[in-house]
Image 1 (cartoon, one colour):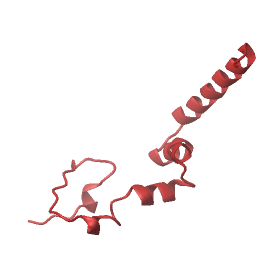
Image 2 (cartoon, helix red, strand yellow; image 1 turned 90 degrees about the vertical axis):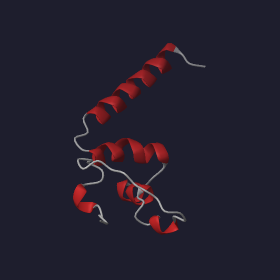
Image 3 (cartoon, one colour; image 1 turned 90 degrees about the horizontal axis):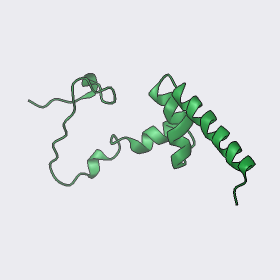
Length: 84
């Protein structure tokens, strides 16, 4: 059962976590502070490796059209293969 004291400590802990997340200057820093911890990854390298399609594309069994914006910060234009 929550007491007024435990509720206050929980709220203080929440504020500290949110403040830390808001202070993140990069996506990697945010992922390190939040995403990895929320989903059980040991670090951002493990998370990014697991989230990447790079090692999974060979498993596609049917032709697939992938669309991405030229200014997408997660998939830079330089990293795309163009077949014309």
